[in-house]
Length: 79
Image (cartoon, rainbow, N blue to C red; front, top):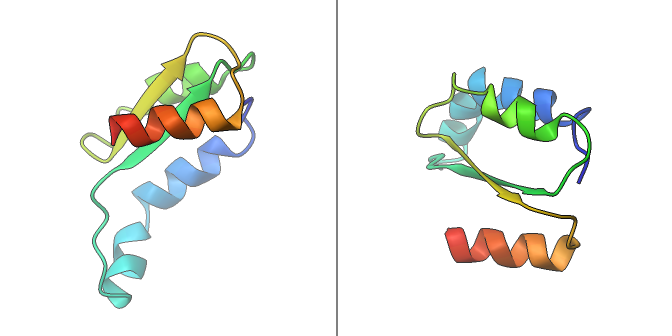
């Protein structure tokens, strides 16, 4: 909810270096699923503009702020 300050950092890290870190740990990044819990800031716009991560980033937007539990449930159901 209202993650406009933190989201660009996450997206930059996904774009520039996540693979090297994961390879070192013998892991593979398949997809990052972001649930926007009805944010009232620019979170949705930032996610929509993140077309530089095709196939690695998927987002779900809940129509209103329903709380952490609802966001986690929506993410789990979509995964």
